[in-house]
Amino acid sequence: MLGLKLPTDPRWVNIVEKNLEEILTDHAFCEQKAASTAISFIVQFPEHTELVQEMTALVKEEISHFKMVHDKIVARGWVLGRDRKDEYVNKLMTFFPKGGSRTEFLVNRLLYAALIEARSCERFRLLSQELKEAELREFYRNLMVSEANHYTMFLGFARKYQDVDIVNKKWQDLLEFEGQIMKDLGKQETIHG
Ligand SMILES: [Fe+2]
Ligand SMILES: [Fe+2]
Image (cartoon, rainbow, N blue to C red):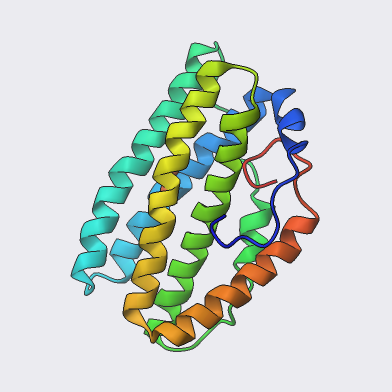
């Protein structure tokens, strides 16, 4: 699914289930960061008109996801906590060497974004299948579909801005690296933990 090298152990859902407040908090911030990432593409690459258009739409969609998660937190009588560290994203984003051309930088950023969407989508799929509450299963099923579309969009943009063969090779290498990172994860009640 989505080219990912290592599927999440379904037992991760058991860990999540025990602490829904924690997963919803982490998830809310994932959506906020997705909106921030979309804004940063606009700020850093204003010359790519099509990208700016799509990122503008994405900011709205991701911040609406944030609101949906925040509403769930509020409905349960909780208050949004502080942002959690995302060890997965921090590790992932060390893969491509710093420096290089502007195009290189753009494409690398797009590939990171595509992969984070892909893994989020895979995690949402598990939640949509395994959580006990039907309402939450439905919630994650809808979000899974959105994130799958974002994954396709980011990968499509990467292939548009650099030679397809180069991009495909980078993508495969990044998938391998991500699979290695995932070996140590799947043990925390966070979206990527
Ligand atoms: Fe989202
Ligand atoms: Fe997304």
